Amino acid sequence: MFTDYQQLLKGIGEAVLMLDTNGYIQYSNPAATTLTGYSADELLNRPLAALYPILNDLTKAEYELSQASKRGTYVTEGWKTKKDESKFWASMTLSPLYDNNQMLVGYSCLLRDTTEQKNAELDVRYSEEKYRLMVESVRDYAIFMLDTEGYIKTWNEGAARIKGYTASEIIGKHFSTFYTAEDLESKKPEMELRVALATGKYEEEGWRVRKDGSLFWANVVITALFNEHNKLIGFSKVTRDLTDRKEKDERLRQSEERFRSLVEQVTDYGIFMLDEKGRIVSWNEGARRINGYTAQEVIGKYFSIFYPEEDILIGKPAHELKVARREGKYEEEGWRIRKDGSLFWANIVITAVYTDENILIGFSKVVRDLTERKESEKALRESYDRFRMLAEELKVTNFELSYANEELEQFTSIVSHDLQEPIRTIKSFLQLIDMKLDAKQHEGLKTYISKSINAATRMRELIQNLLHYSQLSKGEIAKENIEVNALIEEALQNVKSAIDASKAQVVIENEVGVVYGDRVQLVQLLQNLITNALKFTEAEQPQIKVTCKYEKGSVRFAVTDNGIGISKSDIPKVFDIFRRLHTKKDYPGTGIGLAICKKIVERHGGHIWPESEPGKGTTFYFTINKENREAQSIA
Image (cartoon, rainbow, N blue to C red):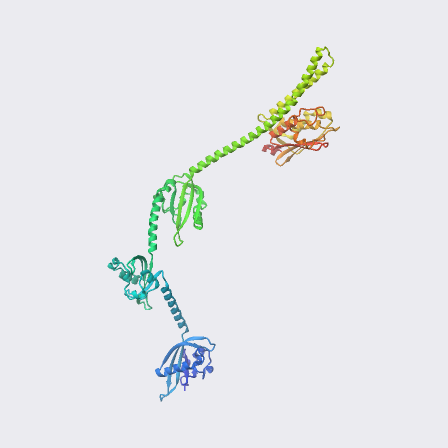
C-alpha cells in the first residue's frame, strides 16, 4: 500500500514511520534507522510502543493514535528510546491515513529529535528558577521588577525587610511610592526610568521612604529589560540600604576632619600622606618645619627628594614602600635632606593605608628629627669613651701602684735585714778595734779592719744595686733595632773573665736577626742570667747555652746551664728582691740580680720564667714583644 511513496520518503531528513491501524510499523525511512538505531527489518511489524520509555507502553500509544484519529493530527513531545536504550527527546506528529472510501488504513508518524533544544530549554528554566529562588531569598537587597510604566510586578524578601511592605501590599503600585515629596515634585522617578531606557541603566545614592515614613539612605540601580526583539518589557530595580554606612561615613568624615586639623597643627613631627606611587598628597606644619618645604612646593612630588644620593641610587625609597606594603609598616633611622641641602638624622615610620575592601590607597609617613638627640648621644658616647680610657689608665696606674706597694713592702722587709747586716758587722769590728786600742793590744787589728772594709764594700754594692733597680722604673727606655748576635757577644764579653776562670763552655744558637729594645738593659739582662749560670754550679766545667728564636709573635731567649738547679717550692721566690736561696758563703751575691732581670723584661713587654730540676740545671726563658715593623722585616 505504501510502495508508491517509498522513493519520496527516502530523501526526507526526518524519521518517518508508516503504521497499520493497530500501531505496528509497516515502513521506516533511512532517517528513522539513523535516529532509533534499529534497522528497517528490525522495525518492521514492531509496535510504535517499542520506542516508548516504558517498554511496550501500548496504553499510551493507543491513546495517542486515537487522538490522531479524532483530531486529524496529533502532536506531542516526550522521551523516546533507541535500540541501545539511550533516550532522546522527540517531537512526534501522528496523522491518520484513509483510502478512497475514507476507511482508516493506518497512520503516518513523523519523529524529530529535539534533545539539544530541550536540554537548552531545561537549562534556561533551571537557571531562571535558581535565579528566582535566589532573588526571593536575598535579604540584604531589595530586588523587584517593574513593568514599562514603573508599576511593581515582583517583590522579594529583601524588599519587604528594607521597605516594610509585604508583597500583597505593594505589587501593582507605582515605584514612586518610595520617593520623598521633593523627589516626587521634581518628577525624579520618571526621570530615572527615562535615563535607564536611554542608557540601559540608572544608578545613584539618595534618600528613600519606608512604609512607616522613615527615611533611609539607598543605593539604587534601575536596569531596562528588553526581549529578543529588542522591545522594552520592563525594568529591574535593586535597592540597598546604606544608612549605616552613610552614618559611618559621616562620623568618619568628621573624625578625619578633626584628625586633619590636629595633624596640621603638630610641629614636632612631620606627618604627611603619599599616594600608592609614593607621591606626596598632604603636608603638615611639622613636615614644613623639619624638611623646610611649604605644602605648595612639595605636594605632588615623589618623596625621594628627602633622601641622600646613595639611597636613591640603590632604590631605597621604592624598597621602603615595598616593605610597608608587604608587612604593613616600615621603620628605620637614617640621614635625610632638608630643602637647604643640610642633613638631619630622622626616625621614619611608613604605614600602608588600605580601604575596607583591602585595596591599597597610599601610605602615611611620620618623620621625627633626632639630630639633637644623636648629637647628645655622640657627646655622651665620647664622654663615656674618655671616661673608659681614663678608667683603664687608672686601672693600670692602680695596678702599678699596687705592684710598687708590694715591692716597697718587700723591699722594706728585706732592707731591714740585709742593709743592717753589714752595718752591724762594721760596728762590731770597730768596737773591737776600739777595745784593742784601749788595751793597747794591736794583734788582730788588721783582720778587723779588713772585715770592716769588706762589710762596707758589700754595703756599697747593695746600695748601688738598689739605686739601679729603682731607676729601672723611671723615665722612657731608649729602644732601637739591635742585632741579636752583637747583643749576646757584648754580654759574654762583659763576663769573659768569669767564663775563663771557670773554664765554662758557652754555646749560642740564634735564629733571629734583630730585636727592638734598650741595648744597655738587654745586655745587662743577658749578663745577669749568664753570671747566675756561672755562679750556681758545682760542675768542673760549666755548660751554658744561649738560644734565641721566634715564637707566637714574640722573640724568645733562653739561657740554660748544668748547675745545681732550683727546687719546685723555690721557683716562685727567685725574682723576689734580696731573696737568697743559698748562703753568702756558698754562693755570694746581693739577691737583686734576678729582680733586675724581671724588671727589664717587663719594661720590654715580655715575660720571664725559669724551668729547673734540682741537680740537673736551670733554664731561664724570657720573651720580648716585636714592637717594631722595621725590626721584623730586617729579621
